[in-house]
Image (cartoon, rainbow, N blue to C red; front, side, top):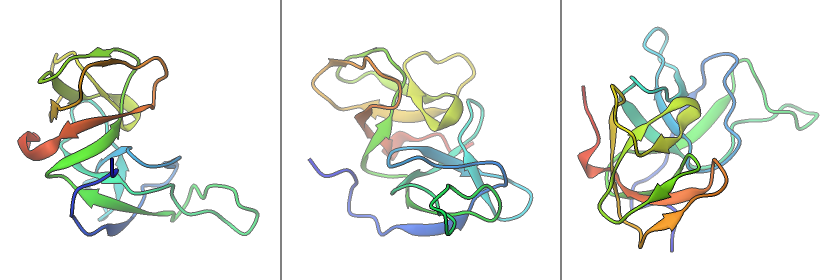
Length: 137
């Protein structure tokens, strides 16, 4: 299975003190300076990371002025999930640190889990989510 739909990746600058450790992390707009940040529960998701954020000459993830590539929301994406049980057709919501989970609360809708049902044992494992129904407000 491919990690992302047919979207072309976009590039962005991360808000200071944010780092992205790999693919599947949900990003949201920072709202102040044309930057993105790790998605939090009440953020509207902007996209899904295509890889880790930039590193410095010593190969340490940059924490100031870092860049990241991401795929815009829409279509099926493999997204980082919390450790939970996911069932086919379940709605998933944006949680902290750019991950999804199955409990709504006041969290923003990311989309519908389109896998065959699975138990995610380690937070950050990737699950297939149709993000076409992603919250826009």
